[in-house]
Image 1: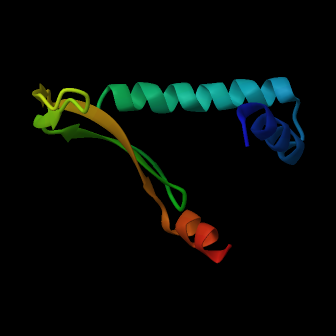
Image 2: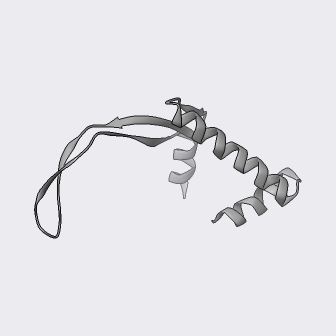
Image 3: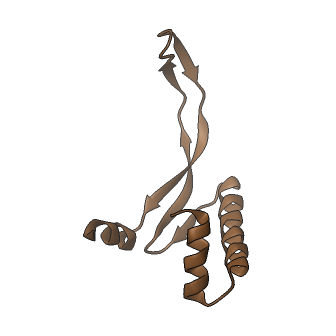
Length: 92
């Protein structure tokens, strides 16, 4: 499912226009992004949790030359699946 298809389904279920569904989705994604960029977590009970974690510096290898290179430490966004979503996916 792509964004356009998602907006159509949300608009139909919420009985709103596709434009309003798009604005709502954009606001949700923007809020999640801002919260994560500030180091916060976003927990949607039953669905999952978005959080920022630190990835330690490590050594990597260039696949073409085999040369070792340093990969610096950095922060990444991580999503942990909630129980209801996990169960819904496992049923099918």
